[in-house]
Image (cartoon, rainbow, N blue to C red; front, side, top):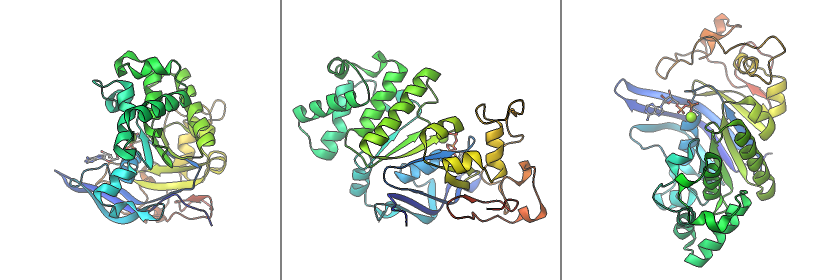
Length: 320
Ligand SMILES: Nc1ncnc2c1ncn2[C@@H]1O[C@H](COP(=O)(O)OP(=O)(O)OP(=O)(O)O)[C@@H](O)[C@H]1O
Ligand SMILES: [Mg+2]
């Protein structure tokens, strides 16, 4: 029996829009054990960020609405937490880092004051304690000249350093889990590699769990223990990174791999999977991938269940 830190069960969530209510997450289930890194992959619009935001209850409701499901974190259902319990969850128990640090860092505050804020809020830390903790966490995320950095503003730092500061802010209260939504997409390749390296080191040294959202299957291979593939608001395949990347069962996963520079067989790299993710409201009753699928059959008009033991796929055409 796996010992879960986070467990999302059958989450169905949508938004009230001008076009009516649109379901965006359909029966999403995910789990994460202590110290594990889970990669969440899928094309744009599949629901990765909405999943991440729903874990921290960051989506205003309305317009968002949870139709059904549970999000268990350490035996408590996040969907039932009070405002004060939620405040404790955000930043203190679960840290979050986003794609573009400039939108999450406050341009008018020094790095030192921004790092101290969560400590004052969650730990009631005084100025001296906050400063010591800030210096400590800056060193941990590999920022040199930490003393000097405390007095600088975000615009004085390079993109890579800003992302390290974001990670430092997410870690300063020693959370059990980190949610990283495309943390390297806005960075150039060398810096990307350094940030991923840092996440791996932190995961090992601090034993935290990481939910890593990415488009890049190469990143999954290097960083994640397990992976969940999301398509049109559903989890279509999940398993260990080795299982999913070397023996993909869902035609969508195979399509992503064929389009990936790292995994495509020599001379067989496809530009991308033809067609597009159907938008919410246009997803019908059957398998949402059917219209793009090379293996489509009549039965695909009925939604395939996610089946299998450790390695699961939601496809009528596969053996798992
Ligand atoms: N506030 C909202 N109101 C209505 N629809 C929304 C809202 N927020 C997100 N959506 C829709 O939810 C779906 C999933 O969006 P989400 O941002 O989770 O995708 P994603 O997988 O993170 O994509 P990307 O890779 O581009 O970041 C999209 O169709 C999006 O248009
Ligand atoms: Mg996103």
